Image (cartoon, rainbow, N blue to C red):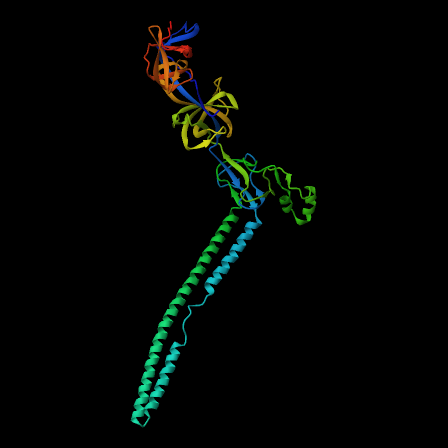
Length: 449
């Protein structure tokens, strides 16, 4: 059962009790007629629920290794941040050492590079050319023949012009090359910087992994050393157990565990020396200081449920007690029920419980099963008829009204619906008479005494 509506207690006012009289009609079958009156009708939705704790956290192993130190016991109360255990992980510590070495190499590479590459020798070439041109000019000026002297000086001037043009082209090429070398130098520096960022990040992650080997409680609560729900338990790989032993004992232990057999049954309760793997659930910490209920309400009923709706709960473990409750929230996301239907999670507060004898009921424990009755609609002092008086005619609700001794069909609009009484919002008046039993045996116009 996912959720269903069932009868609520009806408070009928003394002046509005339905008068019911037995009569016969329609071929001698028993038919009952009642006068329409007033009553208080409460519509209730019933849904399965589970007792939930304020918080429950599963503590997992931060790395592959073994439990080096266990500082808590089963049922111990702990505070958030308190050390629960310490995991010894050679792999995590080795990863930290390797990350530090890689970072040191990256730092050395970033600082060992020389300055930017430059073009050497250009100034020396200019000086040598100037000296050569000066010597050639002096030699030309000592030529006695004026014509030959002019020709020599003219040729020297042409040579100087050619040198200056070549020098200018070389300067432009050198500038372009220098710019390229500068960009290359910047790229190399950027690469070194990026590598250093990566190695520093690797060191930081490795340090966090080693620091996480000291496992602390995420919440206040009670410790359970049993395997968390859904965690693998009951058997571990025999070779993994053997691998944790000294080499001198591995051969003997392997023989005792059945040689190369795949698994060996072991006690899964957490203890010191227990091999663990990264992400494996180790223990749970449950904060049961405040309990609540989580109910699964069918999609056909959930639109009637709103925050603040009062409810009561009955626990399978305490069948003779009723616990106060009220709706706190409705999850917007649907879920699939075990029978394939669509349900919505409704969360409720869980108050004190009272036994049928009026004594205080025991405090529930997280995970206990319950059934909640949600009072989704209450119509007080309203027009009401027995639920058996209403039948479906196509897509509308209807009743048989008795007028002048004969049955007349009349469509009605219903409000709150209990199983024994329903509210009639439209279609009936106080004092009218309706068929409340045997409605399926009545036809329009039948005589009903």
